[in-house]
Amino acid sequence: MPDGPRLARFIDTMIELGITGQVFGEHGIGKTSTFFHHVRRREDTALVYVPAANLTPDDLLVNAPVRQDGELVLRQLVMRQLKPGKPFVLLIDDSLQAGATIQSQLMQIACNWTLGEHDLRALGCVGVFLTDNESLTETAALRTDPAVLDRMATLRVTAADTAWRAALSRRFRGVDLTGVFRVWASLPAELRRLLSPRTLEHVLDCALAGFPLAWGLPLVDGRRLPLAAAAGGPDGRPGDDQAPEILGRVAAELRRAGADVPDPAHVPDAVRRVVRAAIERRWAVLIQGPPGCGKTEVVKEVVRDELGADPLYFSLPVTNVEDLCAPVPTLDGTLDNLLSGPFLEPGDKAIVWDEYNRPKDKATFARLMEVTQEWSLAGRRIKGLRAQIALQNPPYYLGRKLLVSRNTIAQASRFTVSLEIEPDDIPANEWLIARYGGVAETVLEWWKNDIDDEGRQWMTKRTLERLIRLHGTGLPLDIAKMYLGDGDYAPVPLTALEARLARRQVTGLRELAADLDGWAERLRAAGDEGSDATDIVHRVFANAELSQLSRHAETAARLAPLLPPKLKATYLFGADPDRQRFWTGVFMGGS
Image (cartoon, rainbow, N blue to C red):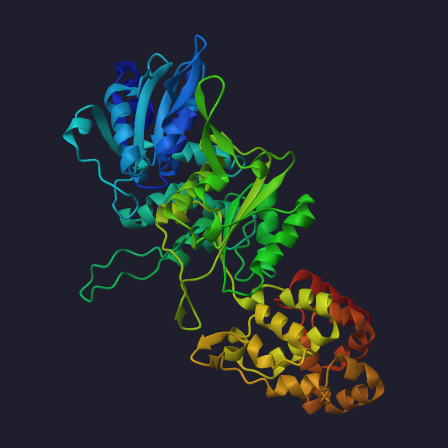
């Protein structure tokens, strides 16, 4: 066999001998990318990529009436990809994830290189390969039929058998990855399996974009993948999570190579920054957060701002496979996959996969594995696709199990960034104020000051909007809260909110502005030790939204410089850039 990575040599040999090749290996080690890169190096040979997980029984072959010599006859139409017009290698990826009917069709292809009445060799096929990870945790079937297994040569590969290091070096030109590869090679086999080359690529993407490296680790069943050895100790528990130490070593090697890798512990306004980065860098990203916190609205807003158009929006609970693409007969006697109209619209576009872990059926979930990894549907590229943003809820929230589906590491590791957020990470307060004005400000003051942390979790931003809209209708505000059954609502009393809405005297920015001289005198009298007045002014400034502060800039400029230094520092450290700029301007011009 020729020199080169073991998988590449296997590909060449199977093509030369005309034998079906079966390739098994862990997820994310570069099996598919090796086929794409290696086959394209062969002159005048195309790679026909067929993701088996996405196939329905009528995708490969279907009977249809065709006019022949003036009469209609029944013919078997084969998928258009199998007639590329030149020699081709057929790669059936994720071959064990297809259903039973597809497995039977794949048997004929693997055994005889035929499909129905069609001889693939006559169509130009020079090689047939089936690939997958044979772990039952990631596949739908096992291939055990001797009639099939006897027709193919099988190669089990590891990361050592693919050219993933060369692929990453090409992907990150200008950054010497030698030290990173050394860190990866030094890990135990179990940790190398978890930190697969695909996941390592995502870690590098996050690092070089200025995000925390941990965001490159996938969210499996709603939880960040730990880099820990499997259970095996005397107590049966897995080892400690080594991700912080390993990712720290990766960051150190990147810095040693001259890369700017801040690896921040906190990223202000993370959702907006991640979506903007996804559009700029052509990423697929996953954002997981509790229900009602405003994820979807913020994502749609950013996409509109960046692309000047609404995203292509699909809610998975109501999305069928046929909503994305479906095979149809064509005039030239083939089957062509007809894509949903929005995918074919001109211009740049971004897709939002909402309720990503609540799919209507497994087929839809499986079909997304292709689009999130290969940016194609049924082998057809989606032109102008700049980003994909998947949104989902965690498995548990407020002590309750949410009705979401589990995923595998193979599905989870398709995303460059996997971001976990809390309600406070979505700046939905500004949106509420902009839309509903003074009533929203009053409700938010109650939410920030009058209830505890647990109460704030129950009162999502979606619930706050219902409270705002119900105010003044004459209906009781309690009906806006989450209903828990048996006459019980979310355990958050609304007495204080009703008092605020009835214009009970409270202290906010408006009240400070109405008596600037008096509050300035109280702060001067308090000095650096502080007083009740100090606490009140600090609380008002800390809880105010940026739009509110901007409207009361004179109040902030007059009172904030009179606060103790330790309180003033809290307005600058850890705040988002816009808020920092505001307070920097206040203190630079204050007296």
